[in-house]
Image (cartoon, rainbow, N blue to C red; front, side):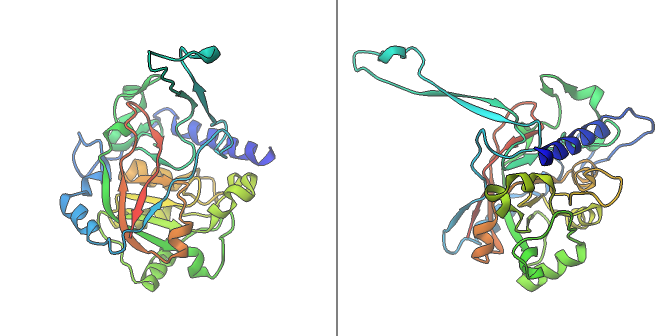
Length: 313
């Protein structure tokens, strides 16, 4: 419980920081123009999808999403529940002359739980989000009028895994460990891969190994990148940055900034974030280059959503 409270404090501190009034002009201008709403998804092309398909040599498919349920650890107060119903069939009743039966289900809870994509409306600075969109202009209790996840195009491109745990010679990095640009570059080079424009870059830290065995510790902190790492990856013109951690950023933070990698990637560069990726099998099989496929649920007005990305080798 103590660890979950720490995670809750981080979550609310981030939310308050992102919603601060505009004391100064603070915007992120998109390189794709003032009307752009999809950010780094602009790098996606049919040619990238075709080349990614060419990486498939074995046909082995890896599910990168973790199972999600009422007991899934998440940044508090996020929770979810699934309720299964049998409408009109209570007491053993059936439907029609063929005595049909069916089940229906309902989900209640948060979309930022389990494996998830952070859309461009998730993190900003001083109440301003990607491409200069002010919260006061597009955020409503019923959903965002811009930058919602329904507008993210299907992501089919080359994915690469950078195994930092293996590079360091450990099974798992420790909470607060920062993955540096130099380390990302060195590990990628050792694996024989180069980060290219339009890639999805996924970092394996080994932290995902705590998800089932010690969920309290898993949520209490994490290894990850900081602003420098985020700027390095954004400079490579990648579509998305993912990791086997719940928040991409190294936690606890080394200074008084809060989720600065989030702000750098989402707000300043329009680069999507993929969290809680199950990278264990990719790392075990030493699959460092693959076809990456994601078609996220298109919930209108949502700022993030649960996903199950696929890697194909």
